[in-house]
Image (cartoon, rainbow, N blue to C red; front, top):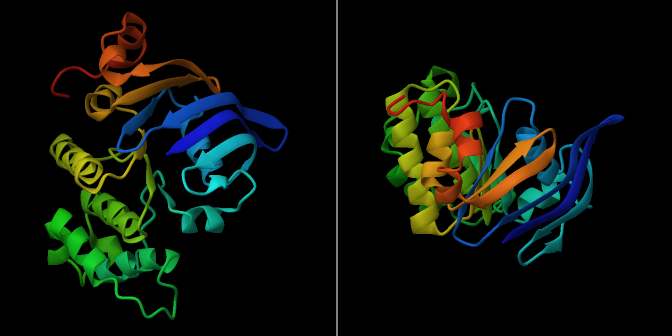
Length: 243
């Protein structure tokens, strides 16, 4: 579904990504693991067209998208939920969700988005309960649900999630990740996941890539990497069972 080859990305003269290859298969969850500053968020921003990059990014059904801007990439169905959620604080929950439809519905479109809205409310019932509350008044977990719900309103072909567990309590994280798996399994949306909690990411993913210094240093099936001594020592030791 998404194929990235020899991707280089730059912040001015600084090369942040140094020839990365990543593949996201249909119906799969693929995770990116690495320490802070390894290049995980930069990779998602590069795919989304937010920073200068070279190389090849191919999206199934559209072909090469490296030369396209963020708006064109979103319209093609590659939807990015950024780190930090970035919901609109002065809009209601429902208004926040409706902004996601701009991707296909347009400001003055006439297509109904009732089905999309009901699907999001079925996935996240708390958003239905709070549909008239302003974005700023939601808890961190509810804001993350809202950010993912808004992305689903955009009818994604591929969903990219950047650190969805950041700043959330363990029980909220567990619930949220159950919903992420549900989105993938029931709606068949491929997911590219950046997640600092390596153990949790590997538990729900099919494929995994380990990034360090702007390069992929290890890749394979998530179930295998979870037991790889190099991964355990570098990334899993600090995430004790139940934490």
